[in-house]
Image (cartoon, rainbow, N blue to C red):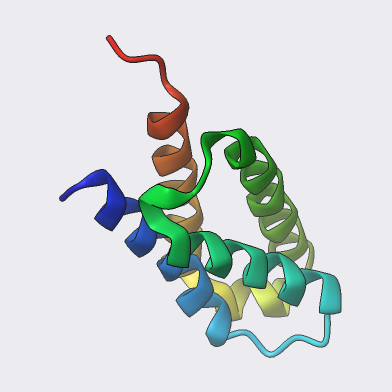
Amino acid sequence: MSTTDSIKETFGAVVEAYAAVKSNNDKLARDVEHVGFYAQLGESAPNSQLPNLWNTLERIEKAINADPQLKAEFGETGEKAIKAAYTAIAKRLAPAA
C-alpha cells in the first residue's frame, strides 16, 4: 500500500466510522469534515498541516470517549481508524532514515 492510499484510506475510515454516529455536536461534525478534507487530499496534504490534523483527531477522540452512546456508535472500528490515522501522520512526519 502506498502512502497516498494509506492516508486516503485511514482518514476516510475515520469519516466512515463517524457516519454511524448520531450526534448533534456541530464541533465534532466539523472536525470529522476536516479529516474528510485531508482524506481527499491524500499525499497532496501539506506536512505543515498534519500537526493540526493530529489535534483534530485528538478532539474527535476526546468527544467520542466523553459520551458512552457516541463511543458505542463509533465502535472499535472507529477507534482503530483513529489510531491508524495517527500512525499515518507519524509516518509522514518522521524524518527519512
